[in-house]
Amino acid sequence: YTSDRSVCSVLQSLTKYSNDKNALAGVVRSILSKMKGGHWYNTQENIYCFEAIRQFVNKFESKGTEGAIKVAIDGQTVKAAPKNVKFTSTVELGESDLKASSKVLTLTPEKKSELYYTTILRYETPYEKRSKLSQGFTLDKTIERYNGKSKQWDLMKDYTLNINRGDILRIKLKVTVPDERFQVMLNDRLAGCLEPINTQLATASLASSALSGGKAKKYQWETTYYQGDGFEYMDLRLDAAQFYSRNMPKGSYQVEYLVQAIAVGEFFMPEASIEEMYYPDIRATEDARKIIVHE
Image (cartoon, rainbow, N blue to C red):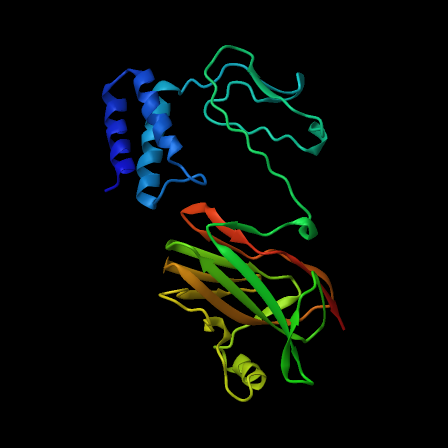
């Protein structure tokens, strides 16, 4: 049992037998304040807390709002939520509704009623202008291309990678953890021109054997800085390489895998990311890249 689960169980009982909305509203606010990233700590807490809030809303606030809710920017109405909203409604303001000088957002119900709202600002930054993020993790990514002439791996440092179709790349991801983390997901999304090589397959092991001087090498689990449990599960997909750890002690870890360029053209490789799944604000990202594949 957890304290939040216990509080939600008590709230369900009080909601059933008490009519003091103001007293119970404080408990609801306390429960909502415990949410991180849109959810509570674990699955059981999600179930108990959601059910407690659902019962509270059904008993005390099932009537909803009366009339529409006007949305204004700097005093000028730009949109309105639908009339007589019972539970939730979403109003999205696009680029055409906002100006660089916009400062004040105002929500005004047509008729007096209780209004609960959340404002979320989302924006997209061009890949080439994005910067690395380190919030509880540090993530470093290096890309190397196999040179068939020298039989060596050449480090690729530029933002734009110029390669040829058929080239094999080795991607290394180094993770530094300042404190112990739990339920960690490392997600490295791939550009559309790249296909991961699963060295555990017989056909792919021939390629990895040739690149490693005759010895088949499982690049997925190469852990130069391995300490403790590290990553224990890997999923090589067509669009991403994902690594998972239930428990990651303080330290540094490195994983690597192979990909091959299979299509010609210009592509973007999205940034790699790592996060603690139940605390997504503890995360890190690595810079995105642009890839140009020649015939």
